[in-house]
Amino acid sequence: MSSVQFWQHPASLKLSMVQSRPLPSSAHFRHHDHSFYEIGFVLSGRCRWVFARRPQRVRAGEFILVPPGHAHHEVIEPGERARLAWVGFDLAGAGLTAPAWSLRRVSAGPWALELARLLETVFVENQSADLGSRERRQLALQEILILVCRAAGQPAGRRPRAPEKRSARVARSAAHYLTENLDRPLSVQAVARYHSLGAPHFSVVFRRHHGVTPREFLHRSRLVKEIAAICGYSDAAHFCRRFKTATGLTPKQFRLRQRNRSQPG
Image 1 (cartoon, rainbow, N blue to C red):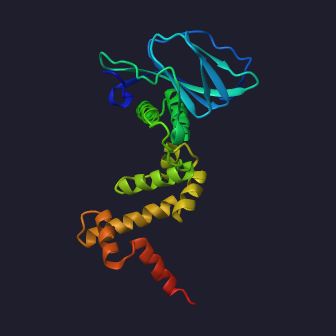
Image 2: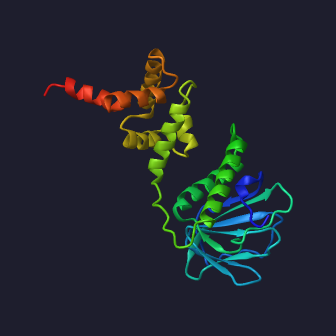
Image 3: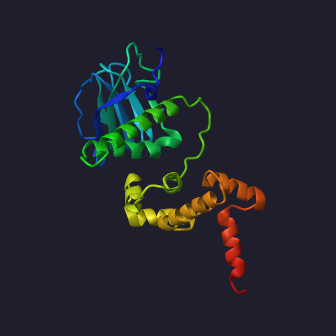
């Protein structure tokens, strides 16, 4: 294999570290190597990865892949304060060859914020004994590997799409999760925790994007599902599509229009 698509191979976590604060240029990192792959990501500032060949200057929002056996150390640029994160992993499979973009800086582009969040998730879950921490850590690692391959494969000169704001991403993800799990006992606190937010802040973010609280959204979604079942539709999504085809409005839009008409002018 001439290039590794990491996400296509089972990966096992070997190292996870996220600096809690930026370090000055006086900080020292020892020269070392690993028996596993390592991704170094610059969260803020600038840093050099020093190898036997020409060093690579990596800026905030960029990462570098160090294959097994490549001795290196990091140097924070003079006058800079940099905050870094690392994740190390082994890949299952024989005959894998490191990709051509290893040992070179790669811009994370529109996925920079998401990568930073995922690196933090792996770091936190790796130290946790909470229910599902191992599984969540593994899922976050898998997402990291997908995104670094996606960023590295970005065609040269192609303008990346504008990144979606994290608040919008959280609200969209949470709404999808709620609608896909209507039959399960759901906790707003648990959904908020999954998105690394406190319940009050999560509720504010959700309401800002959907116009209702998570509990009200869940209540209305369950109600739509019950109506769909009564009307003989297999699922709520099918009912909503047929409703819009017939009326030109979604059930939510129809409900708001009826409410406005009922209010005294």
